Amino acid sequence: MQRASLAAAFAASLFFGSMSAAVSADNGNANAEDARVAEERLLGSADEDARYLACQPFTRQIAAGGVVGQSFDASLAEAGVPAAAMLEVRRALATSIDLGRNLAAADQFYVRYEQAFTAEGTPIGVSRVMWAELRTKAKGTIALHRFRPQGGVERLWLASGEAATTPSMRLPLDVVTVSSGFGLRADPLDKPAGPGLAMGPLPDPAKSVPAAYVEVPAPAPEPPAAARPEPVKPARRQMHGSFMPGPPGLGGFTMNSPPSLDGSDLQRIVAERNAEARRAAAARAADAPSDVAAQTQQAAVTAPAPRVVRPLFMHDGADLVAPTGTPVYAASDGIVIGAAPNGGYGNWIRIDHQGSLATVYGHLSSFAPGIQEGARVGQGELIGFVGNTGRSTGAHLHFEILSNGKAVDPLAYPELKRAQLRGADLERFRKQVKNALAERERERAITLAFGGF
Image 1 (spheres, rainbow, N blue to C red):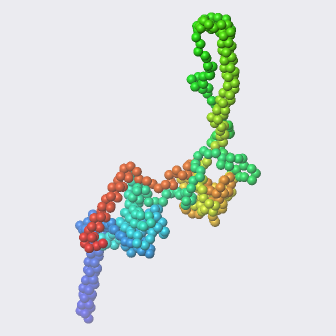
Image 2: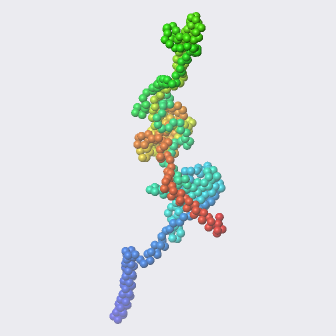
């Protein structure tokens, strides 16, 4: 019995001893793996470069083209253009063409975009358009190219060097006809406001010319002596004789030939001469009043009429002619500060925008629904309709732009125009466009050589 107990105890020790040894070995292996991971994390591994290259993404430029079918979006998707690139090219093209009205079936398109991929070829990230081209029957060819000007932002530009982006501001009418620009002008009504005529804010006296006055022309200068007509001298008879002092009645003229003249002949000659002198004096006296009258009449004809100058006032905006009821749109995103009748402005709206900018719209016939003080509006949102309210001579929209509270010329404001490449930037851009077109021709030649189209 005692021998059996000893045998059982020995067997048990052997069994549990082997198990503890196995557990100790497992713990040792786990600790070694943890130490190796910590060492690689600190010092790196031998195959780290290979593993990084295997996972490193890369980018490719991919070209897609085709013919517009029933839908431009469907045609782009069918050509394999990713959604992000499709949206970007649509927005850029929409600044130059109405894709809904001017794009037709059978028009051609070409899009070249950049896309990032994993090592396994899975696309990652957002694609971006490098350049695109749309050939239409209605508007011809429209080309876009991505370019970064010196010190500027990378964006898509038209082949002309004009930015293919919407300006931060727009004019409030779709069709613009200017009847009166920014600056000094005379009062269009040319009369004071009566009880039923709204005047609005009075003109700033510092910006107006003093009261109207009459400008009287200066008297015509006396014609020079050389231009005056000489008086007509009486005709004189040719007589033979010698001049020598004589009696006053004879005028100092004494006849000495012919000797046959008697006293009666001499008296006859003197009488005729005195008669001619009296006739010449009478002619001069009769002609003098007519000459004065003629000169007076000539001066009245040539003298300009008195010119009446009306007072000038500063016109702080531009008047855009349009029929009553024409839609008026917000020039930019902003908050409506006022929308109500306002004196000479008639029905008036003011919108404040970012950057200390504000826009004013006057003479509206009515406001669009929801346009009231405090309302937020977006660029191009309908805010009202053209009218003839307030101090106005006809249906039109008075449009102002205020920068830091000061009126500026709304038709020359830079934010209403697209950016334009110039100088060295334009030259670099043209070279880039030329290289892109040459590369496309090379790709087309390779495709044709391998039986493509």
